[in-house]
Amino acid sequence: LKRIVVLISGSGSNLQAIMDAIESGRIHGQIVQVISNKTDAYGLVRAANAGIPTTCIDHKTFASREAFDDEVRRCIDINQADLIILAGFMRILSARFVQHFSGRMLNIHPSLLPKYKGLHTHQRALAANDLEHGCTVHYVTEELDGGPLLIQAVVPILQNDDENSLQSRVHTREHAAYPLAVEWICAGRVRFDKDGIHLDEELLPDSGFR
Ligand code: GAR
Image 1 (cartoon, rainbow, N blue to C red):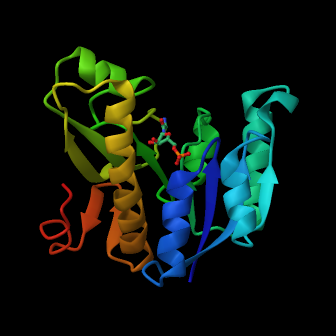
Image 2: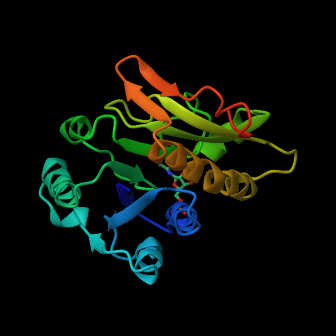
Protein backbone atom coordinates (compact mmCIF):
# COMPACT_ATOMS: atom_id res chain seq x y z
CA LEU A 1 0.00 0.00 0.00
CA LYS A 2 1.24 3.45 -0.86
CA ARG A 3 1.67 5.68 2.16
CA ILE A 4 -0.16 8.94 1.60
CA VAL A 5 0.09 12.23 3.49
CA VAL A 6 -2.59 14.83 2.76
CA LEU A 7 -2.09 18.56 3.32
CA ILE A 8 -5.16 20.75 3.83
CA SER A 9 -6.15 24.23 4.93
CA GLY A 10 -9.93 24.05 4.95
CA SER A 11 -13.09 22.05 4.51
CA GLY A 12 -11.35 18.94 3.22
CA SER A 13 -14.08 17.76 0.87
CA ASN A 14 -11.42 16.48 -1.55
CA LEU A 15 -9.75 14.70 1.35
CA GLN A 16 -13.14 13.14 2.10
CA ALA A 17 -13.55 11.96 -1.50
CA ILE A 18 -10.13 10.31 -1.37
CA MET A 19 -10.82 8.74 2.05
CA ASP A 20 -14.10 7.34 0.65
CA ALA A 21 -12.32 5.87 -2.38
CA ILE A 22 -9.80 4.19 -0.09
CA GLU A 23 -12.56 2.89 2.17
CA SER A 24 -14.37 1.36 -0.80
CA GLY A 25 -11.20 -0.38 -1.96
CA ARG A 26 -10.75 1.63 -5.17
CA ILE A 27 -7.49 3.26 -4.09
CA HIS A 28 -4.78 0.90 -2.94
CA GLY A 29 -3.26 3.29 -0.49
CA GLN A 30 -3.40 4.38 3.08
CA ILE A 31 -3.56 7.92 4.43
CA VAL A 32 -1.02 7.86 7.24
CA GLN A 33 -1.25 11.53 8.23
CA VAL A 34 -3.32 14.63 7.55
CA ILE A 35 -1.53 17.93 8.09
CA SER A 36 -3.26 21.30 8.28
CA ASN A 37 -1.74 24.74 8.60
CA LYS A 38 -5.03 25.97 10.09
CA THR A 39 -6.22 24.87 13.51
CA ASP A 40 -9.90 25.22 12.58
CA ALA A 41 -9.80 23.34 9.27
CA TYR A 42 -12.86 21.09 9.12
CA GLY A 43 -10.81 18.50 7.24
CA LEU A 44 -9.06 17.73 10.55
CA VAL A 45 -12.41 16.63 11.95
CA ARG A 46 -13.11 14.48 8.89
CA ALA A 47 -9.73 12.77 9.27
CA ALA A 48 -10.13 12.24 13.01
CA ASN A 49 -13.58 10.75 12.44
CA ALA A 50 -11.96 8.24 10.10
CA GLY A 51 -9.29 7.40 12.64
CA ILE A 52 -6.49 9.04 10.66
CA PRO A 53 -3.73 10.79 12.64
CA THR A 54 -3.78 14.56 12.28
CA THR A 55 -1.28 17.32 12.93
CA CYS A 56 -1.77 21.04 12.85
CA ILE A 57 1.34 23.00 11.94
CA ASP A 58 0.28 26.61 12.28
CA HIS A 59 2.31 28.72 9.83
CA LYS A 60 1.76 31.82 11.95
CA THR A 61 3.99 30.39 14.67
CA PHE A 62 7.05 30.20 12.38
CA ALA A 63 9.53 32.98 11.72
CA SER A 64 9.84 32.29 8.00
CA ARG A 65 8.31 30.33 5.15
CA GLU A 66 11.39 28.09 5.12
CA ALA A 67 11.08 27.28 8.82
CA PHE A 68 7.43 26.33 8.37
CA ASP A 69 8.23 24.24 5.29
CA ASP A 70 11.03 22.45 7.15
CA GLU A 71 8.64 21.40 9.88
CA VAL A 72 6.04 20.15 7.39
CA ARG A 73 8.78 18.28 5.54
CA ARG A 74 9.97 16.66 8.74
CA CYS A 75 6.44 15.54 9.55
CA ILE A 76 5.97 14.07 6.07
CA ASP A 77 9.32 12.31 6.16
CA ILE A 78 8.83 10.66 9.54
CA ASN A 79 5.65 9.22 8.08
CA GLN A 80 7.65 7.78 5.16
CA ALA A 81 5.20 9.10 2.60
CA ASP A 82 5.23 7.75 -0.94
CA LEU A 83 2.70 10.31 -2.11
CA ILE A 84 1.91 13.81 -0.86
CA ILE A 85 -1.50 15.18 -1.75
CA LEU A 86 -2.29 18.89 -1.57
CA ALA A 87 -6.05 19.14 -1.11
CA GLY A 88 -7.02 22.76 -0.66
CA PHE A 89 -3.67 23.54 0.94
CA MET A 90 -3.45 27.29 0.54
CA ARG A 91 0.24 27.96 1.24
CA ILE A 92 2.90 28.54 -1.39
CA LEU A 93 5.70 26.04 -0.85
CA SER A 94 9.37 26.95 -1.10
CA ALA A 95 11.54 25.60 -3.92
CA ARG A 96 13.61 23.48 -1.57
CA PHE A 97 10.49 21.80 -0.19
CA VAL A 98 9.04 21.13 -3.63
CA GLN A 99 12.34 19.70 -4.92
CA HIS A 100 12.57 17.34 -1.97
CA PHE A 101 9.23 15.77 -2.96
CA SER A 102 9.76 15.98 -6.70
CA GLY A 103 7.57 13.47 -8.57
CA ARG A 104 5.73 12.53 -5.37
CA MET A 105 3.50 15.54 -4.78
CA LEU A 106 0.11 16.25 -6.35
CA ASN A 107 -2.18 19.27 -6.28
CA ILE A 108 -5.70 19.98 -7.44
CA HIS A 109 -6.37 23.41 -8.86
CA PRO A 110 -9.82 24.83 -9.68
CA SER A 111 -9.22 25.80 -13.30
CA LEU A 112 -8.30 24.27 -16.62
CA LEU A 113 -4.57 24.89 -16.31
CA PRO A 114 -2.58 26.54 -17.78
CA LYS A 115 -5.46 29.00 -17.58
CA TYR A 116 -5.98 30.89 -14.32
CA LYS A 117 -3.11 29.98 -12.10
CA GLY A 118 -3.39 31.43 -8.60
CA LEU A 119 -6.55 32.62 -6.86
CA HIS A 120 -10.13 33.63 -7.81
CA THR A 121 -10.24 31.23 -10.71
CA HIS A 122 -14.04 31.02 -10.97
CA GLN A 123 -14.43 34.78 -10.98
CA ARG A 124 -11.79 35.10 -13.69
CA ALA A 125 -13.36 32.43 -15.90
CA LEU A 126 -16.72 34.23 -15.64
CA ALA A 127 -15.19 37.64 -16.32
CA ALA A 128 -13.54 36.25 -19.45
CA ASN A 129 -16.90 34.91 -20.71
CA ASP A 130 -15.40 31.46 -21.04
CA LEU A 131 -17.72 28.70 -22.18
CA GLU A 132 -16.07 26.04 -20.06
CA HIS A 133 -14.15 25.75 -16.84
CA GLY A 134 -13.00 22.94 -14.59
CA CYS A 135 -10.23 21.57 -12.47
CA THR A 136 -6.80 20.07 -12.95
CA VAL A 137 -4.83 17.49 -11.01
CA HIS A 138 -1.13 18.07 -11.56
CA TYR A 139 2.26 17.25 -10.17
CA VAL A 140 3.79 20.02 -8.11
CA THR A 141 6.94 21.71 -9.35
CA GLU A 142 8.62 24.94 -8.37
CA GLU A 143 6.42 26.91 -10.73
CA LEU A 144 3.16 27.77 -8.97
CA ASP A 145 0.30 25.75 -10.54
CA GLY A 146 2.70 25.00 -13.38
CA GLY A 147 3.66 21.33 -13.01
CA PRO A 148 2.83 18.53 -15.46
CA LEU A 149 -0.92 17.94 -15.84
CA LEU A 150 -2.34 14.55 -15.00
CA ILE A 151 -6.08 14.87 -15.45
CA GLN A 152 -8.68 17.57 -16.07
CA ALA A 153 -12.43 17.64 -15.55
CA VAL A 154 -14.40 20.09 -17.68
CA VAL A 155 -17.73 21.70 -16.81
CA PRO A 156 -19.85 24.07 -18.89
CA ILE A 157 -20.32 27.67 -17.80
CA LEU A 158 -24.05 28.40 -17.85
CA GLN A 159 -25.71 31.68 -18.64
CA ASN A 160 -26.89 32.44 -15.12
CA ASP A 161 -23.79 31.25 -13.32
CA ASP A 162 -22.28 33.24 -10.54
CA GLU A 163 -19.10 32.48 -8.68
CA ASN A 164 -20.87 30.20 -6.19
CA SER A 165 -22.79 28.10 -8.68
CA LEU A 166 -19.74 27.66 -10.87
CA GLN A 167 -17.50 26.83 -7.94
CA SER A 168 -19.89 24.17 -6.72
CA ARG A 169 -20.16 22.58 -10.19
CA VAL A 170 -16.37 22.40 -10.38
CA HIS A 171 -16.09 21.13 -6.81
CA THR A 172 -18.34 18.18 -7.59
CA ARG A 173 -16.05 17.18 -10.45
CA GLU A 174 -12.97 17.62 -8.28
CA HIS A 175 -14.37 14.92 -6.02
CA ALA A 176 -14.33 12.50 -8.97
CA ALA A 177 -11.09 13.61 -10.63
CA TYR A 178 -8.82 13.59 -7.61
CA PRO A 179 -9.62 10.09 -6.36
CA LEU A 180 -9.24 8.78 -9.92
CA ALA A 181 -5.79 10.34 -10.30
CA VAL A 182 -4.73 8.91 -6.95
CA GLU A 183 -6.17 5.51 -7.88
CA TRP A 184 -4.08 5.44 -11.06
CA ILE A 185 -0.92 6.45 -9.25
CA CYS A 186 -1.41 3.90 -6.50
CA ALA A 187 -2.02 1.23 -9.13
CA GLY A 188 1.32 2.10 -10.74
CA ARG A 189 -0.32 3.28 -13.94
CA VAL A 190 1.33 6.71 -13.97
CA ARG A 191 4.99 7.49 -14.25
CA PHE A 192 6.48 10.94 -13.98
CA ASP A 193 10.03 11.64 -15.08
CA LYS A 194 12.05 14.41 -16.72
CA ASP A 195 10.21 13.90 -20.01
CA GLY A 196 6.80 14.37 -18.43
CA ILE A 197 3.94 12.11 -17.49
CA HIS A 198 3.45 8.64 -18.84
CA LEU A 199 -0.08 7.35 -18.40
CA ASP A 200 -1.22 3.87 -19.33
CA GLU A 201 -2.65 4.52 -22.76
CA GLU A 202 -6.11 3.13 -22.30
CA LEU A 203 -6.85 5.11 -19.13
CA LEU A 204 -7.97 8.54 -20.30
CA PRO A 205 -10.28 7.87 -23.26
CA ASP A 206 -12.80 5.93 -21.17
CA SER A 207 -12.57 7.97 -18.03
CA GLY A 208 -14.78 10.95 -18.84
CA PHE A 209 -11.82 13.23 -18.17
CA ARG A 210 -9.23 14.81 -20.37
C1 GAR B 1 -10.73 23.08 -3.95
O1 GAR B 1 -11.67 23.69 -4.79
C2 GAR B 1 -9.36 23.13 -4.58
O2 GAR B 1 -9.39 23.01 -5.96
C3 GAR B 1 -8.89 24.49 -4.14
O3 GAR B 1 -9.35 24.63 -2.83
C4 GAR B 1 -10.56 23.90 -2.67
C5 GAR B 1 -10.46 23.03 -1.45
O4 GAR B 1 -11.69 22.44 -1.15
N1 GAR B 1 -7.47 24.59 -4.20
C6 GAR B 1 -6.82 25.69 -4.56
O5 GAR B 1 -7.37 26.73 -4.82
C7 GAR B 1 -5.31 25.55 -4.58
N2 GAR B 1 -4.71 26.75 -5.04
P1 GAR B 1 -11.76 21.28 -0.05
O6 GAR B 1 -11.01 21.77 1.20
O7 GAR B 1 -13.22 21.12 0.23
O8 GAR B 1 -11.16 20.05 -0.64
